[in-house]
Length: 106
Length: 492
Image (cartoon, rainbow over all chains, first blue to last red; front, side, top):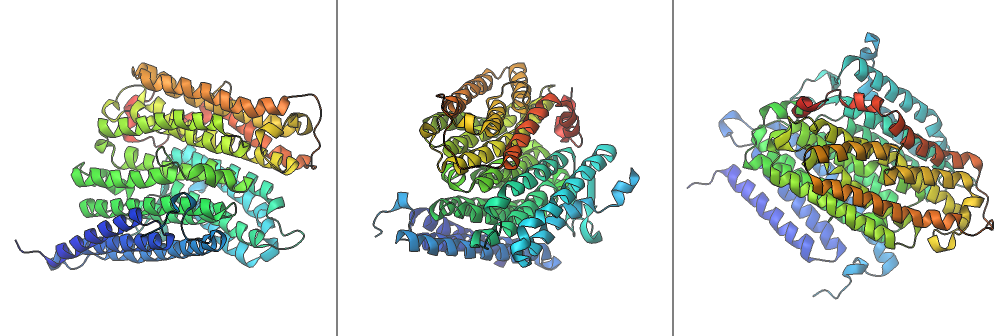
């Protein structure tokens, strides 16, 4: 079976979501969690972008693109707030890990 | 009355608080006074919106003249109108209360500068959800809401804010993935178009499940509630009131929109029973933990965990497979009633707790003996609001539980009826402890003075929670406007 370009991108997006979710759950360091959030987000956007190109003869569907751009802005502002909070927490607690998950990382 | 429809009511409900957000940023130390102008304007707008919906039925506008599916519509039915109205009463009340803690007198502080833009942005996000007609617009509004809510929680401690943020980030990604899947299967995100186009196949059910899971994390339904008590319990009292009364209801509102307006056919027995069981666990677990708390604000926060559980009883009680049954509409309306009366009662409880903290400097229940004699008006507000949370007549909470209980019994769902009764009894226990301490002894404790004017705010909110029960027919009739089609067979 031949993979179409769009399907390949959609599968890559799904793989990124998987990698991100793994990182989000396994890593206790808060900065890594923020990164994992961004990896998942990129995966979702890649998946969404691939959806817009499912019928190449009809041209690309512009709606997913608009959604992705808006989504990136939202993700960026959430990331900014999250990083600011992580910095504040690290200043106060000395470590960028939530108290209940504070164990030595390998 | 036709002139009402020519006013840009829906656009202003979202646009006005958004404009106020910008104004609050530039107006510096005057920003705490902004609400004196914006509050009455928003209240008037909400009244006009209710009148318009009441006389003309559900409204819908294509913003900027762009029709769906290209444009994004705003719309209001009875459900939207009562939530906008609830927000238009609670937000200004909390703002008046917050003017002391977050005012610029004598000097401007970080908190007094940041609170007001956050406050108005939160209002805009709430209204954008209540009048939203587009699933992606819900996402944007929900993220704006999360942003403001997390920032307000951060006033009380960064660890609590981060814990909330982690749940919220996961929730927003799950919701976004669901939206992507739904767009893949239906090629539209408008609620009206979706409800016609949608086929309940596997992809759609998966999309609905992902969106719901994400929203549950933001609503803090058991077992995703762990972030709520520290976040709501440690934030400043006005912030806690907004978070418990309105913010968690907004994500619940979207869940209702998804399952009753967009894809009612996709409701399966498995789904409705899961949501109902999680709700039942929340009621029992949240109440038991509320009993064990030593601090007043934590008791109220765990009570929110418990009360959120009741909201999800509408799924099994207005069961998808039994929509045509006469009690389905009653159960649905009862659940919405519960969301409204809980909003007023919980805002009153948190503000009353805030006044007690100002008077005593702490909120340890064991050390507040006799506070009722020093702050009689505040404790009256606390007691009235507590009646509504316990579900005793004649409060709004009683009407809500009565509607849900009768539909549970009519539908033979004895389990949920028993959980509701048990939840009511547990609420009596956990709210009796602070009340008992407040009336204990016979001396009048030494307290820092609390102005009478500020004590009237929680009292007014608690009175509204009671009036909802006494004059329940007005909101009841109102909620039937634009009732989900699936429930129409069940109106009685």
